[in-house]
Image 1 (cartoon, helix red, strand yellow):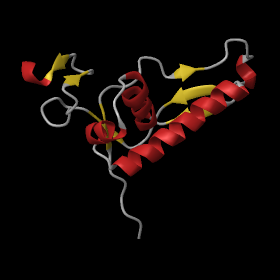
Image 2 (tube, helix red, strand yellow):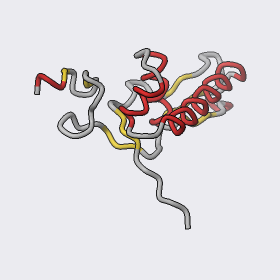
Image 3 (tube, rainbow, N blue to C red):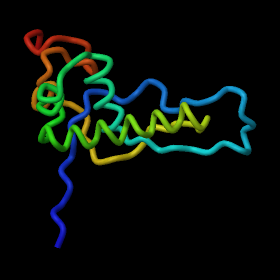
Length: 118
């Protein structure tokens, strides 16, 4: 029997969840699905500049799990760019941060304040 998947902590949902080429006909679009936790790994490591250990702690996963999530996300972004496919962010096993319980990053992007300002 497989072990149940653990929810990953995510600070906030993306403001936009659909990215892709502007010149493709709507009927011929091919989609690549990126999960919300894959998006969060990109946001934390590439946008926020955190390392794997810091990002893994924020998301509540092991560093090796974060590394796998991050690699999957990078492959999907590359395929979208190289093959001109639409990248859609949705789904996954995640829970949104609750600043009282789960936001450990120091600054909560979802609630727009430092933990010390509670």
